[in-house]
Length: 205
Image (cartoon, rainbow, N blue to C red):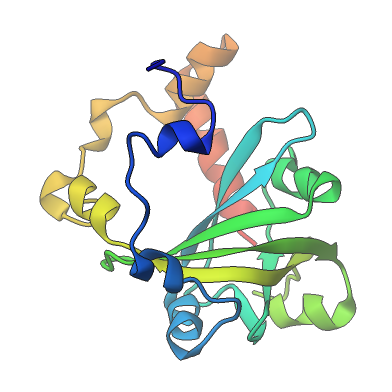
């Protein structure tokens, strides 16, 4: 047997067929528990596809419930100021398919939502997400196609929420030092750190 598995048939020679529960838990719309999970979640990762065929994953965060449930098959997520690379948003304009993974601090369960996205600056959507008098740059509306709770194994294995497993920040150089080294800046790392911290504070919303 080849060591490179190039199709599902090859994969199934190593992995068994999933149990009924693993398949049957997938729903086509939100219900009370998935809605509540989204209301409590302050953080998610969103996956998109690039035009060149590569994939991209980006974090999104805010106050708990920063993603709004419009109805059982639609979500709305604000886009706040960032680095203006627009990787995720550009990808959506080429391919609307998105995958979202919601987290709640302290919870080992996660919620997966797959669907198709559109980008909007419609006033009624923008007004939902005004923070400190500032609207978002745009709003992503996700039409849900699949939703299900993800099992706890990954977070249990990683012990992500265990304070005793937290890695001291000084284990690695500061972000400013990393940027200085990677981009060959001549200025001291302390100056880069100060600039990054100021930008993060001034452009939070």
